[in-house]
Length: 132
Image (cartoon, rainbow, N blue to C red; front, side, top):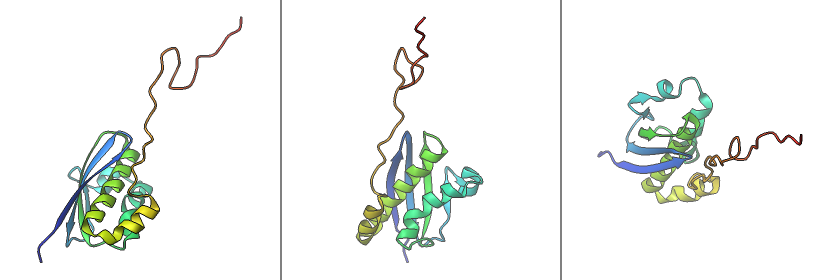
């Protein structure tokens, strides 16, 4: 059996993840040449978020996943990996589309940090007003 490889890009906030699904694997996840436990530490919620598309499509142990991720924080990176896995699963099989679309995994989350404005403390917070 030949190993098929599916490549996709996932994004969330400022994080960009390049995901490669290799068929015929055992379900290993390698992020930036480290295991997922090493990379994400003791945060099972992030691991759960990453594997959601595979669980929904019932393909948990079918692929080995290799990821290169840059930018953003750890949570945004997990979201980008989830988006990339969803897109790669779509390339693997078209029957996954309805399931992933209904759960919202194929939609890129457009929310990004708003820029700081001049004359203000942050994006929306003002300096304290003093009448006298």
